[in-house]
Amino acid sequence: MQLTTTPSIEGRRITRYCGVVAGEAILGANLFKDLFAGIRDLVGGRSATYERELQRARDIALTELQERAQELGANAVVGIDLDYEVLGQGNGMLMVSASGTAVVVE
Image 1: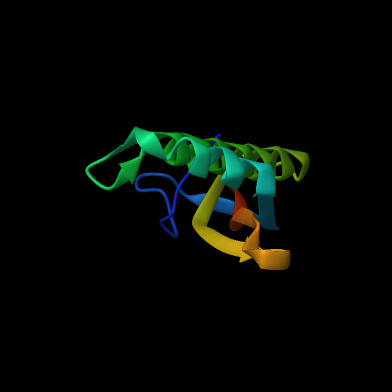
Image 2: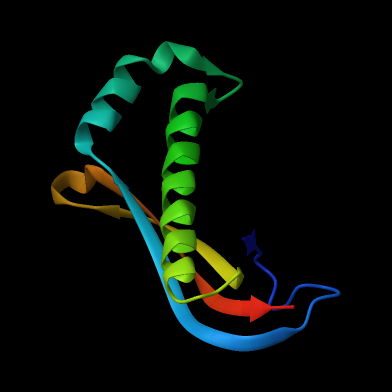
């Protein structure tokens, strides 16, 4: 399945719009405690541990988005938007959401 942030796929024609799809991943409070405990991995102002966890959350959100698109009979998702939100009491959780339009392309 092709996933893209653009509204179309160059060289491919959209033949059917299947609907809006989304996927989400929420990282819990324990993650943040672990990250702050491991703050020593900061190099040049970046935390490799935190970046790995964010990548994992993005991967989960995009996988869910793809599965939902497949359920609708789509073979691509266009116009994907990734959003990040802090949630919960004391901002202890981070949500990564991905949304886009499931389509059939030829």
